[in-house]
Length: 427
Picture (cartoon, helix red, strand yellow):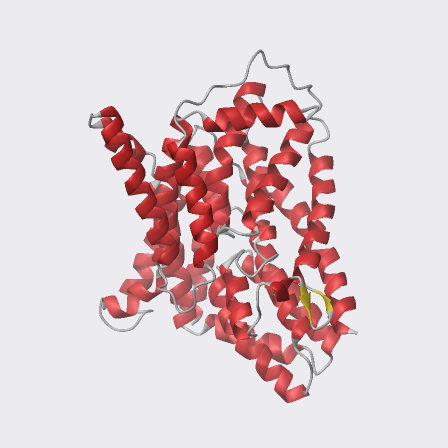
């Protein structure tokens, strides 16, 4: 366990320090985990492959291919034109884009949301001749926030809903009280104010457009819209395969490529959408999944959960506070899915031992674990995807660029939710 923690910590420090080499560092650390036998003796695929979230990797690949066709259709430019007509300046354009991504992310996976919304933001920034880095960061952190708003917004929400046998409506109204949705939206309102403050210097007026961009091919837009609808529909299917969302995205990408080939009748019609897939981002996530799986196999996450359970000494408010803020801290560095999966039975055990209603502890876990990823550029898959998009556009995202948006945003979102959930379910 000690060696797993040391290698994991060193890899994270190196990734934060040498941002250009994150995929290679993560993949190298993952290989060390495999060589040292952290997944069991030998190079057994049965031990290694279950730690890789192929669903997320397939979603990223498929959505990126669809988005490439979406961009080629000029629909992002048209949407950018419409948004620019509705807002007075760059500041409000940034806020509008973050809120737009948040609304979508309440119903669609965070990574898919970033991949869909980012092209629109990039077009706005090109037209306004402004730096897109803070725009994309704001979109990523906003999508992470809204993932906890509904049962279908994020994997962690689905996991908690399954454990508590919650329905879609239970996230809005639970046990006769306003539910998790309102805690998230309260945080969203406060964090929107914070974004307004962070973009306060961006007062450049939006220039009037001579005419809107014309879109002649709506098939990629239909495919992207179909992706959203099918992802929402799939979230209601019980006992579905783990890679269902990934299959949806990849299938629609293949349909889009076949349509593009029939339309253009040349090789670039197939090659260009495939070239749009960011394999560096996929490699980084692959390495992270293996690293996190390795420390989980060595009992690091179980040990952390056990320490949290003992720390409260039976005081529910202290337990709630520790769970929320420890979840924020832990999720800033490790994937929140294995952490939440580990903590759900731990909280159930605490509730049985103390004979208490664990609702406030469960909701505190979900809010802290969902928002913690916004603290660092590699704390959530949506952040990694957003930074990957910027890298492909030729922009380098410094840690300081991310921290000055991600950390204030996280605090602005988690503090109101922390207070609200205790008042609603803790007292």
